[in-house]
Length: 72
Picture 1: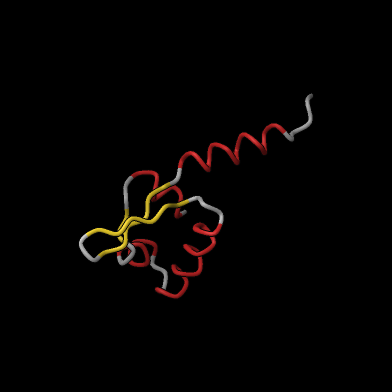
Picture 2: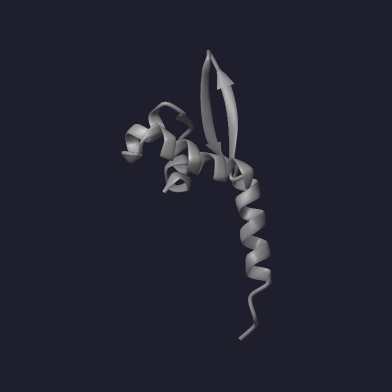
């Protein structure tokens, strides 16, 4: 769900839990997983933290997964 949301726009860290109806702790845990796997990038601007989709990493991981599929 995060990835779909971030694909449309850059989101402020404070807005993500509100939009997804998550608690801040749940949003933080999920964002930590996405950050660990490099699916999102962090940008700090004017004292706020913004997240954006890291499309290069996602494309690479999808490409690797597809390359491992058996040929029919």
